[in-house]
Image 1 (cartoon, rainbow, N blue to C red):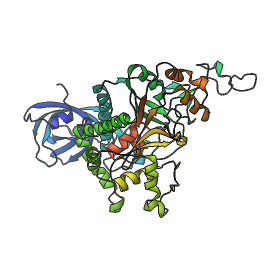
Image 2 (image 1 turned 90 degrees about the horizontal axis):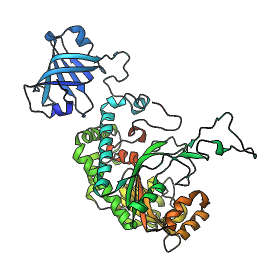
Image 3 (image 1 turned 180 degrees about the horizontal axis):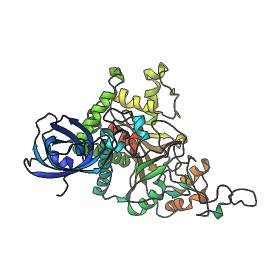
Length: 479
C-alpha cells in the first residue's frame, strides 16, 4: 500500500480503513497483552500511536521495535481510547526497516540538554524540538520567496566567492588553491596571488548586497537569499561563521519606502508562521516556558505566540538615532550605570541592551532607527544634507535587538568616491560598483535580514546554533 504521512493520518476521519505508515520509533511501552508504539516520520510534531496486539505478533519482532528503529506498519485506523490523540492505528502487519541498538542509540526517551544535542547534530532532527525548528525554518524560507514573488521581485544568485569586502570588516575566509606549505612568492617575497586559481586574493562573501545593487539598477526590484560567511572569532550564542542572509535591493526607493517594505516583510513572515506552523509554535512555546520556570517573573520572556502577535498588531515606531540617544542618555539604566556600555552622546555605537531598552521598556513596540552618524556606518550609505549622518535604518525587535539593517544607498558618484577615500577603500578594486553611479544612477535602497536571527525570534530559541541545521562556529565544523 502507498505510504500515508503521520500528520495526514492524525487529521483523517477514515475510521475503519487500512493505511500504511513508515517512520521512526520514539517510544514503546506496554505489557504482555498490548504494546503502544509512538511513531513519528517528521511530518509534524505529534506522534501516531500504533497499538500492537501481542497475540498477533512474534515476541522477537516486537523486541526489535526500539527507540530509534525505523518501521513500516499496515493497520486499521480507529478512534483512540486514550487521551492526547483522536485516532490511533491498530497494527495488522509490522516490518522492521532499520534496527536501532537501544544500548548505543544516544537519543533516549528523556530530556537532553541543547549542548549535548549540538554534539549529535546529525541525529537531533529526530527530537521534537529540532523537528519543530526544521519545519518552521522551511515555512519561513517558503514565505520569504512567496512575499517577494508576489511583489514582482526577482531572485538573484550573487557570488559566494568574491574579491570584495562589502562591509569593510576585513574578517573573511580566504579561498585559495595555493600550496600552503610552499606558496609561490614574488620578487618582494610576498605570496604571488597571480599564480592562484582566480589570479588574485579571493574570499567567501560577507554579503550579496553590492552585486545585488548591480541587478537592481537594471531590474528595479530584486532580492538575494544565500549563505554568507564571517571569520569573526566570536564564540557566543548570537554569532555563526556561516549563516543565511535575505537582501532585497530596490531602484527608485528612498528611505521611507525601504522602511515600509521592511515592516511589511517582517509582518508577512510572522503571520505566515502563525497561519501555518501553529502546532510547532505551541510546542516551542511550552518548551520555552518550561526552560524559564525557575526565573523570576520579570526575567521571563514574553510568551512566544503572544510575542509574534505583539509585533503584528503594532505599527513600528520610527525615530532618528539622535532622538534615540537623547532617550537613552536620560534613561534610568544609563543614569544609574546599569548599562554594560554607557551611552555617551552622539556617536555611541548602540548595543543590543540599548536597542532592547527602546523596544521593551520605552516604546513597548518594535522600533526603526534612522539617520546614524556616518562614522559608524558603511561607505555605501547615502549622506544626509547635514554631512554628518547617513540614511541608515535598523529595525529593532523585542528580545533580539537589531533584526534588519539597511539604508538608502549613495547614488552620487562624487559623494561615494569621497566616502571611499575617507574609509581607505581602493577605487580601482570597486570600478564595477562605481560604474553603476557613472551610467544612469538613480536613488535606490535595500536592507539585510539575518535569517537565523529571524528564526531565533520565531522559535523562541536563545542560541543561534540551534536554529540552523549544522552550525559553523570557531573550532566547530562538524557534520
